Image 1 (spheres, one colour):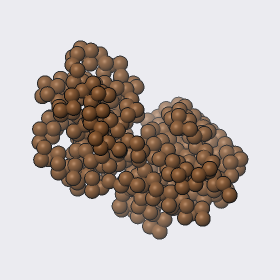
Image 2 (cartoon, one colour):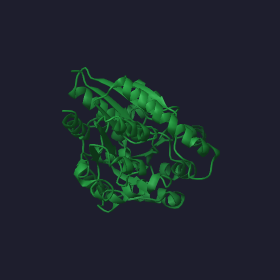
Image 3 (cartoon, helix red, strand yellow):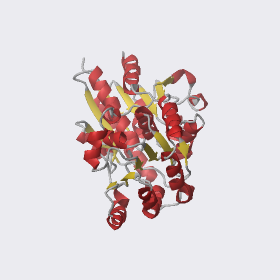
Image 4 (cartoon, helix red, strand yellow):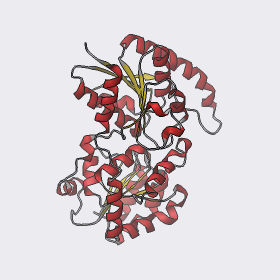
Length: 365
C-alpha cells in the first residue's frame, strides 16, 4: 500500500532544508510514496519546497512578537484558523505519519494530527528546544534529536539521537576547490573566509564587515560574504567602493558545496543546521549566535561546541569589537584551525536523514 507523509514546519532555511532532507530519504526508502508539506503562508518554504518538486499547503500562522505589537492581537484568530485548516488537510490527505521540524506551522499541524490519532514524530534540531516542541513531546511517538542531555525537556523513552539531517549535495566538497575558485572568481591558492548569515542574513556580522572587511583584504585574505536579501544592496556599495577581486558578495548562495570547498574557515550564525553542515565538512568556525533566537538556543548550540574545543564564539554584541580580530588570529594560526577542524568533525553525523527514516519506518510499520 502506498505510504503518505506530511512534513510540517519552516520559516527559515534551518527548518526547511532538514525537512527536505528527510523527505528525500523517505522517498528513497518508499518509492512511489506521496508527500505533502504544510508551511506558513508568506514564508520561504512556500517557494523553496515546490522548487524541490514537493507539494505544499500554507497555514495562516505566525509567532507572537516579543515586544507589544498590534499583530499579536491576531494570534488567537490565526491559531484557530490554522488548527481548522490543519484538520482539513490531514483528513483529506490521510497520512501514515506527520513529521514536525519546527517553525510556525509545525505546532498546529502536529497538535491536530495527535487529536486525529495520526502518528507523529518531532525532529528537534537544537540543544535547547522551543516551548512548542516541549508541549508536543507528551503526545508524539518519537523525538529525533542531535544533542545529548535533552532528557531535561523530553520523555527519555521517546528520544532517539539521530543527528540533524543535512543536504547531501551541500557536504560533498572533496576535490571541488578548483571548481569553487572559478565559480566565485577567486584564487584557489589564497586563504579564504566564508561569512554566512543564513537565509535571512546576520545584521551584526553584515554591519561589522561593511566597516572592517578591508582589514581582511589588507591581510591578503579573500572573503565570500553572504548577506541575505535585506543587506545585499548596502554590501554591494561597500564592494564597489573597495573594488577588490578578493571580495565576493552574494545575497544567497545556491552552491553551498562550493562555498564550503573554497573556505579555509567559516563565520556563521549558530543555527543547528549551519553547525551540522560545518561539522560535516570539517571547517574551523567562529559562531555568532543570534541573541533573539527562541530560548537563546543558538548560544546554547555554540557553547556545546566551544566546550569541546570544536569552535570559537563571538557574541552578537561584540562583533564590531572582536570579530575581525578573531578572524585574523585564526586564519593565521594553522595549528588552531587544525584542532578545531579535528574536534568539530568528531561531532558530525552525515547520515541523520537515513537514521530518521529508520525511526519513521519503525513507527508506521
